[in-house]
Length: 197
Image (cartoon, rainbow, N blue to C red; front, side, top):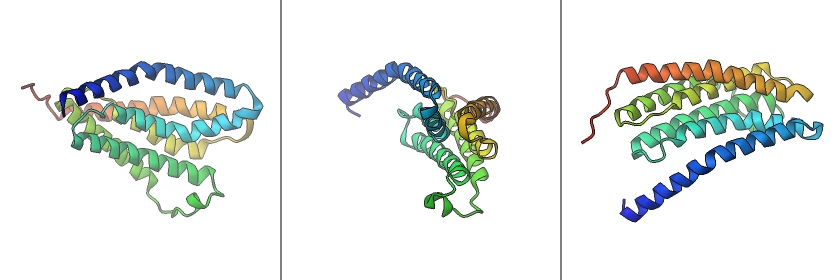
């Protein structure tokens, strides 16, 4: 990579870091405002339900954007597998009239795909550790996994749908995030950090 390309990439990464917190707080504020009005409450619940897996997987994989191609590909594969499997589980349970989700076979291995995503995330974390990089990809994908398994069987319709999603987020955070954190920690025990040259 040419020096000016590396500088431009570093400036872009710094700009992204600068906007991360305002964007997160802005999204949270928009969700809270939408939840206050009956007309937008159902829309907020739908956006939160289907948006959470994609955002969580993307945030987990974002740390790998400057990694080498192999590690970046592994992280993106893990994140994409987790997000797609969770969306398939949600769509099959919630959007029953959708031809896209109705076409999914009943034997589609969604739960194993979510588990594989977490395992791949833990492997990516372990590889990243050998390169001196700190990551929590398995924890983010653990949240995606629990979201994809928990929400379809515990969803609530109507006015309380958003409250049910917020409760599911707490379950995903503690159960999925905690389990993924443990998986990443265990995977990292089997590798040693490579000394800088």
